[in-house]
Image 1 (spheres, rainbow, N blue to C red):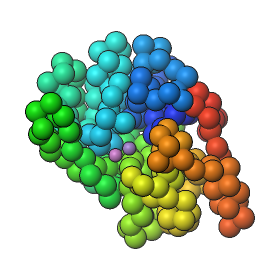
Image 2 (image 1 turned 120 degrees about the horizontal axis):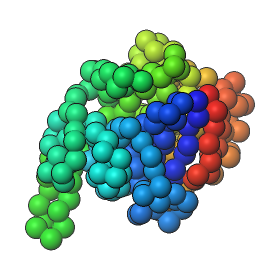
Image 3 (image 1 turned 90 degrees about the vertical axis):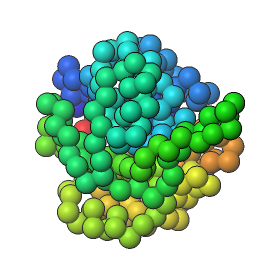
Length: 229
Ligand code: NI
Ligand code: MN
């Protein structure tokens, strides 16, 4: 099984001939090396409604005839774009056949800004996911601030790999992400949501060095790079 980092918060888990993509954002990301048309997947999971998480979801869903999993409000919005959806909510687990995805809390916002209409659509609650696949638990924290129930999540789930934001400004920065990593108790932590825009520039290598100094494994993936799990 392997996980490809597509840049920003976008990851793809590939197990045999099955694939799951979370938060595809490729056309809007200058650092991305993959085009949405190149992605083959069975399902797309969205953490929240912000453009830097959903931009390529409908295109990839249509090309692959793949459903989009999201909170009910975002699922409704995506269905209006003509894609199949599966709405769910925080605390629930969806059985995808080859994987199970539990939607977990994130502390963020989730509106869709309609610039021309000067209107904001409610995008439902922001979330993260724990994907269980082939006995491995992969956590995607979504966009989030640090919150103390991360400790509970880490105690109740044996997390093998955690993707957590470090970019600051819109999400946790490095200091809070280090605490989140400790609370999630992940065997390997991969930083995401940094360097895509100037305002979220971070030194991912030094984040990983600090993780390792406190006894946790970390891994920096460049957009397009993959890890084996
Ligand atoms: Ni966001
Ligand atoms: Mn974001």
